[in-house]
Amino acid sequence: MAKRSSSAYSRAGRKHIHREDAFTRIVEKVSHYYVKSPVQATITTIAAIGIIVLIPIVISNWTGRGKKAAPTQAALGLLNVQQLTQQNPQVAEDSLRHLIQTYPRSMPGQKAHYYLGELLYSQQRFTEAREQYAQFEELYSVKKSFLKPAAFYAQANCLEEEGNLSEAVNTYLKLPEKYPESSFIPFAKLGAARCMILSNRLDEATEILEAMLDEYPENDYKIIYRKIEGKLGKIEALQNRF
Image (cartoon, rainbow, N blue to C red; front, side, top):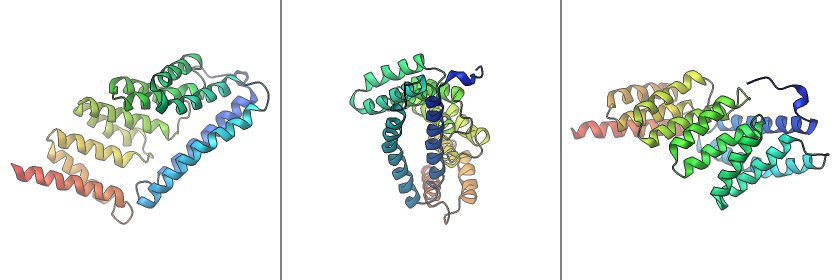
């Protein structure tokens, strides 16, 4: 993608981008605590809700400062879509596709791919959802965004839902290499183990899970540790059946 010139966006548009990045960073920082205990998980949820509540306030501040720039219009469009998603999914989908087509270079236009993926996933349109997540991951201009590994993880989820377990395993296991600092890494490894269990690759799943017991000790990662133990227990039960 060609580099955008400084004249491409107005002052209001640039402020929108900075604020949107700040919100994403807050979500990312809080999410790192999710894997450690239910208390942090609750904090994550509260923080996410708080962000959603704050967005309209921030937008109302921009809109009183002169003519709307394209990024601001795109941001307002994205906010409207989020409000429509539960009420009228078809209108939300049409609006997201329009946003992608109209503002392809803007940050909200790029983010629209991610939200469209979420919408399609909720409708069990997994192949279409995976395509949108992949486009978002490729296009989104914030290289260290929390959302990029989230989109990659979501692609593995889609492959799993499609029944393509082998490819899902490969995708889950690529996440730690591609995004080595992501908080999605333990969930990706658990996803790979889950797909291996479903594919009767029990020895491989056991190897991953036993390695995770050392990586995620119970005292520091209660939620993850319990999930690992649960899957190891399932493997043991399956092995005892034969």
